[in-house]
Length: 484
Image (tube, rainbow, N blue to C red; front, side, top):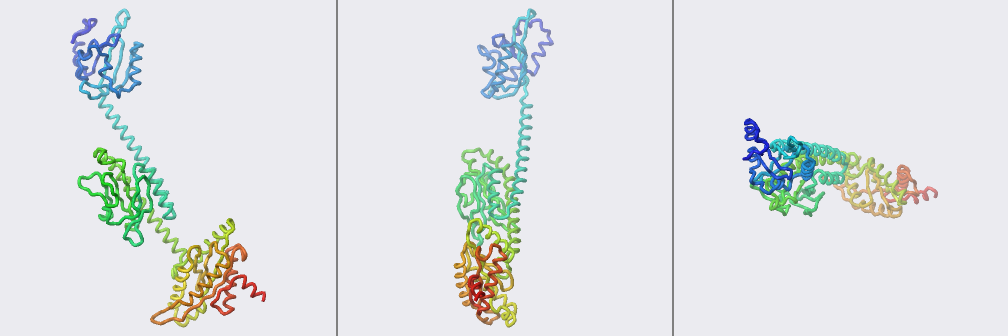
């Protein structure tokens, strides 16, 4: 290795430093031709001086990944003959990449003539790797904090849902936001518990509308199931896809499995994407999937409990009809809607005839049988716009939304006729046939307030009883009767 002519007076210890330093030193002439490299350069890069014959340093050291901005800065510093320090990615002779801290310095002779450019490079690959690792950790932690914030927001929305419909809407939006790379479905057990029905879906996959519990390994095994990363695994029958990784996460409320959250990552086809990448990715998403399933489970339990409590507060426990509380609220809403849309609303007030005699002669249990059967007939007769309610004792009312006076009177008459065909038995004894009376009032003719309509309908009901019971009397007929 030759020492440049103008360095022949260099002391021996300087030669030792140049020979044994770990830094890579390269000298070029003013035209960027390489004239000398030290032993540290050969050890770091693997190139010798002969490798640069007829080539500029950038031709061998730079790569396609070398930052263009850094290259521009280096070329500009060489052109302007000024010092520069940069961090740049270079390539060894073996093809391996390394990061170096490069210092460029122009060298001048005693007369001030520019004779050489010196480049001193120090390997900082290990430092760069640590920086990348730290950056990755910070990015991962930032991503986790973002996920935790999203989960907190999702949890708040889930617990704010008042109905299953609202809850499903929140679940769909939340899953699309938190796990945008996953298509998903939420299945809920049917009332018969033999199948699960599709309640919500998101993504491009078209899932089956129903699935059997035996079609899912998670439901069969009683725990969450991850497919796509294990040496021994089997695809669920409801997926129809054995290449895409997925999660099957049971939804559990009050200790009972009520549904299934299915998350499929179809973009990560196992026949294309490397297994190592899928395993890492799925492991990262597994915890999020479990947390989502847990939050959804708690939210479903909350909605069910809310629904049960609400149902108990607005249902009559004996007949399972709506109670007075529900009726007053629903009637008020219907009247508001009727005023705005100019629709009719009618009320049918009903009362079981001679009900006290049933209690006195056959006992209160027999009276409960009468009320229960009467309520059951109301529920099966008045549907689709007709809302039967028990407002106390043997008193019932039917809220007839969008139904005019004449239609309400006609339907009330048909119902009273059906009442006479009810056959009652209690304690092995056949009870006497029952009859009922009814009065009908309508908005807006008989009033525009709920209590006013109830009073008019009750007055018509009392008029029907005065005329001999077992009949329906409209508010118009009642007014005419009073005039007469």
